[in-house]
Image (tube, rainbow, N blue to C red):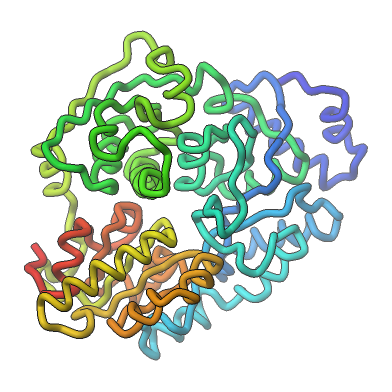
Length: 426
């Protein structure tokens, strides 16, 4: 890798031993992927994936403290993934004991470190940092140093920013020195699609299910998707962005997609069209039967397949303000139709603290609470990491949560039926 004068000076120790180690780490990272140079991080803010004070992560806390002590703090303010704990989310005595004594006992200490390193504010804990309410939405073409998979794929695809699927800690490293290795999704060639996906469904495909199918098929490749305009239009409005948020998170977790192009909709596809498709691209056709096949092959991780769900999680990635409003209306209508006043399964809707503050100032929040739904800022995945929680029969419409935990996936319509009518869960 060829370094410029400033980069070489940092590597040689001009900014201190710790900064030299940070630069060496990034150089080694770039060398592993064949990067020829480093490029500046140009976004106003960064986003970190490591938000949880998990007791076993002592080496991370030690590393963060070394950075703080050496004054090697982030050149950017940053948001960070969701907190793992919220006393409002249902948990029994033993589950809370595990959460607070054995899992996340260092949460307060770690949040103190994040503040010293450059945390934007106390509300900047969300996997969907690009929400308007959060304020960390990069511009098209900006180079990022992010690691959160659902945020990376959204930034690359919907916003047209440029970011590789980095690992945790590499995100803060790039922000500290202000440079990242130039390879992969930062390059024009790396952003070309090597898969063509044709949507030929007779009904609007579930975002999380469609993303799952594509992710498992193309893995880490870049897909160019045709036929989705029939269902979500050709304008990146709130509804389309919400759909793509959930779609992208599924591609990134069920596979390893860091960028997708939607014909006639996402910025690069609008400007460059089929020139984004690499020669020899493979083709994947998705119809209703294919989506049913994918869904039917999800493994059931519950001890008892026919167990009654004890909890429902919605919001992985975090729900948008409009999603919270729409789900309030859907639940209200379905409960009135079924004759119930409250949801039949304990239910948690998760979103960013900033979105929840805005939501709580609306009449929707009162209605949702009256229906028995809890709103929270936590990460459902971190909740499910508790061994006493992962044994619970939990349902979700998040394919990301399904992939990483024992939670069981249902479509939005199936979730709605289960919450309001006690529908069949098979």
